Length: 392
Image (cartoon, rainbow, N blue to C red; front, side, top):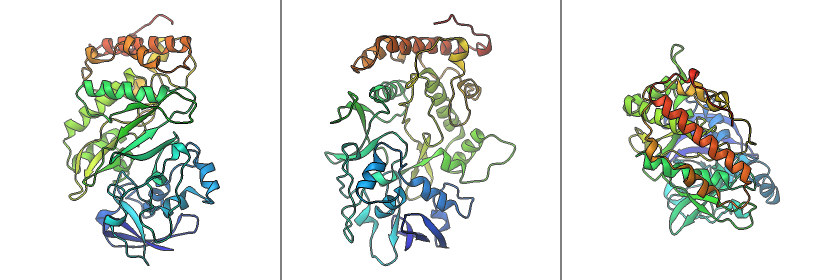
């Protein structure tokens, strides 16, 4: 079936989408400057962008919910919802239908789906009031968009019966804001029928005038010169699109340091983003820090804490471990230790989870204390290779 790839009310490109929701043919480009930034250097970039846009089949219980509704693939689920999202303004319009952005966009139009409660909605043919934003939700953690008193909010669960990921989001988002940096604002929330005590909820930070563009999309929007790193390439592309280089570098360095202190191992290139102006297409700011749930050794069994373990946790994104990430930092004094949550405060938050084992909580708190100690020495110029720590 032929569709127009749309950006708001502008036709960007003609595409052919199969019955299983995948793009089978690329047609004429009508507005080259409005194509998605991701993989823009490739002729088939729109195909990979569309594939990545679909909700992962392993997210929460989406596979079972789609099967119960007779929806064969997440690509079909995405196509049935016109590819709509609450992070940007791209969507698909059947060439045979007269629909407008004002009729279908989810920033203004209502939706009722709640994946966390197992309520998946199938759009009714020719009824543009039934489209949902969850078909384009990324990541394997179970989550859902809702409307709460007119505000679009994202609710997230956890990967296990523990509430650790949700508690981490609240602890770290609060810590980031106390450092004077922007963060998504998370709060704990009880979710009916779940094995964990708490999920978390945060209001939307995109709008009809600001869209989210991942660092991965920024990086792949232009060919990277061979003589510079991916990290420097990202900074350069941000600068070409309107952001000050020092501002971008300072933001990234702060994020590296706060992730180090809280042992976040999931800062991949779609968990770093910018906010882009919907009209000028210029980059406005780096996005608030979000998705910090996989921090504080979540999902890890307690182990003996050594200096090597403290300095070489695996990471995603620009480098593959914390030690290498720290090498990117030029300003080591971006974190005010006095404004970090105390170990006692972190423990208080974790004790909201009735299922956490005391020995596991002791390990988390000790690791956090050691990380602060490492950062304090690092911030004074110490060579991390020479730092030694007693075993846990």
